[in-house]
Amino acid sequence: MERLNQTSRVSEFILLGLSSRPEDQKPLFILFFIIYLVTITGNMLTILAIHSDPHLHTPMYFFLSVLSFTDIWYTTSIVPKMLVDFLSEKKTISYAGCLTQMYFIYVLANIDSCLLVVMAYDRYVAICDPFHYVTIMSRHRCILLVAFSCSLPHLHSLLHILLLNQLTFCNSNVVHHFFCDINPLLKLSCSSIFVNDLTIKTEGLVVLVTPFLCIVFSYVQILVAVIRIPSAAGRHKAFSTCGSHLTVVILFYGSIFYVYLQPLSRYTVQDRVATIVYTILSSMLNPFIYSLRNKDMKRGLGKLIGRRKS
Image 1 (cartoon, rainbow, N blue to C red):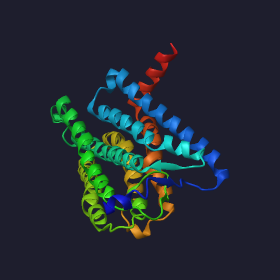
Image 2: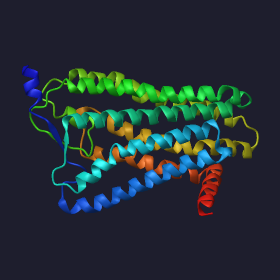
Image 3: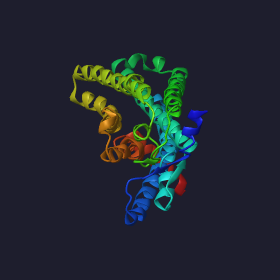
Image 4: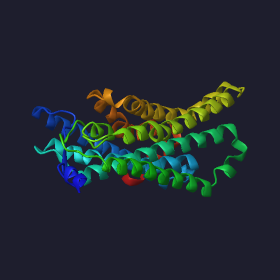
């Protein structure tokens, strides 16, 4: 009963956002509204182009379409609330709403992470074992890989939400962030966060680093295989199929590692800016990265736009 009384002292949180200055709110609203529209439009065009062009009905583009679909919801779990807060004087979110938002953000972010691993595996098979590619990357296996990528993150997210729900928030309810994230929330707790911190440093680290190491391993194998290709044209073609994916991996994991692979005590306002990269900018840039450096996607988008005009 005592715990319930203490926890009830905080029924909502205040999200400070990116800036507390009133003159910054409208420009930030316009900026992120444009980013959101570009993100939704770009990822929807990617999905429609892949769906409408039979030449793009391959495992690589199937995974890309799922990634685009995930990015739409990933951005939607963050930006609409940001836009409302930019125009509101009371930038609050309920306790339950905060945990719900954090749950879905972590689920969708980790689905993105798992899909990047699956896409790296697809490139590994295509370059290192091309003769068995069709057999290995069968439709049944592709669906299983996506199902696994979409299921596992729920366990990770649920674990951290349940642990966070055990904490007592009885002092400040001001979250120094533009969405509900675990580090700024832990800093508000007036009860022990030992278990939470230990879980982040063990299970959280495994979930964060393992996919990245799998991608690194895949690309090391790809690099070895490409070096053995005798012709320069062959090496260039092999590298070109991986360039877009590698760019996305660096952008996504680079910003995540900067934010989360540091002690909680060192969490600062600058981390909010870095968080924008992997939560919002990466989702917006993915369609451009994959289409601008990919002739098949350019052709597919061209056909889609041409069909709409006619």
